[in-house]
Image (cartoon, rainbow, N blue to C red; front, side, top):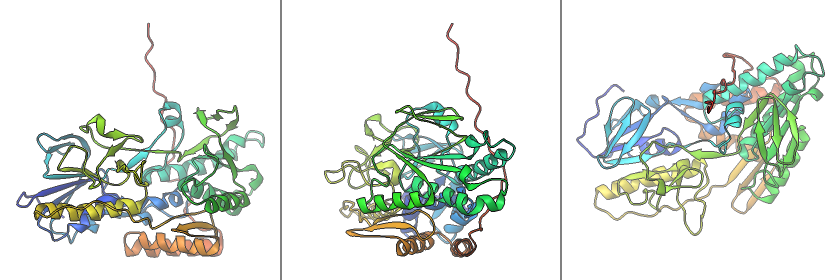
Length: 432
């Protein structure tokens, strides 16, 4: 798609090729608007399956899809790889690393990044999982530490074989369950020198229960499933620090570990130029019920970066793909209404339900007032996620990988392509 943008029609600039951004772009296909889609990567990532890349069940290309290929038949769309540094709302331009880009309507679909709650040591030493690169780093680091444990005595192995997942939401539950399955089914096959009892998987949550946003039945069943897998679930504790060797908690507990995987929180990310008064909890941008930034007519935000706070939703919508997708389609329709001089509408979120998988034949599903768990829930989870992947090839490859893994207990991509090492600590200036 090597075409030069023109400004014949009103220009809609979308920043972010995540779920919300691509749905907005698709909904504007064949409309009398010029769409420019910007992203720092050239692909869309199906984030709900990142944990399977991190644990070697899937390879990275299985959950990613090129944005240019996705939109190659959309004549009114231009894609550019760009880092957006700032927004000049007065002149309606974006400051990017490929030069200034003007807009008539701006949509921020920039998503969220990991929230370490202001603790720089944890940020440096713990491992987040918000993109493909981070998931591949986790896979490499897990395997590296298992390899290193082979060079140690039985007494020295503990930190290398203790894996701590912080955060009991769906990501943390799914990640800890997948690592436990490596322990139960893979460890002694690939590493006969080790015993599975030497490997420990911890799931740490600051609240009294895991999956706090799901029903009590789902939370209780998920904890039961994790216990059956051998995951040590630690509730009601706050992490106070992690130096790369020891993770510490507010109650004084300490765990010696080389690997802390952080899924305890997210925070919005967006370019400079947004009024600080519009930023609310979680570093999200407050928007009205039409996804418009407060006090602006032509700048919008959707998805994880947006906080549409109402009486019914005092904390905004959940940071899940369906919310971003629905907002993207809604906003595209509203922009077309504005261009045609028609009255705009208010966004109404349709909650399709929540689900999480905790390993083979184990999942929990909440759909409205319907709650079910176990084998059938696991199949529903697999079907929904398989059909949500972008691209026929990705669906086929993922289905084949899942099938082989289910039949053999020994599938996966356990390759260390690039060795991961933690960032070097930054020297702090000395005050004389």
